[in-house]
Image (cartoon, rainbow, N blue to C red; front, side, top):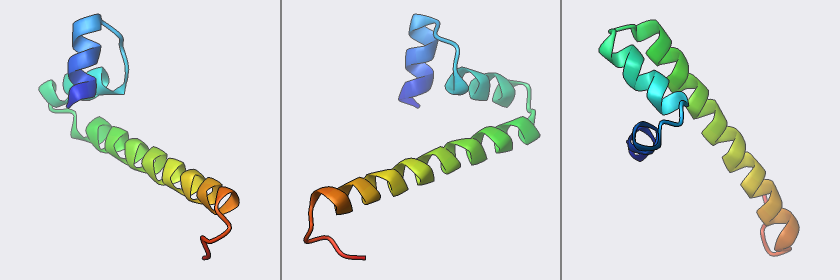
Length: 62
């Protein structure tokens, strides 16, 4: 929600702006695509952070 506010305030066009426009237009297929894309990005970033944490701290074991 804050990303949409920031993009709207500063007129930076991004996923939040697109998401709000698609919601207004009731284009639920596009909304679903954006939500899935954001979920994939969060999962990949979380995995990268876990790998870096394991490399930095030898006490972490998987």
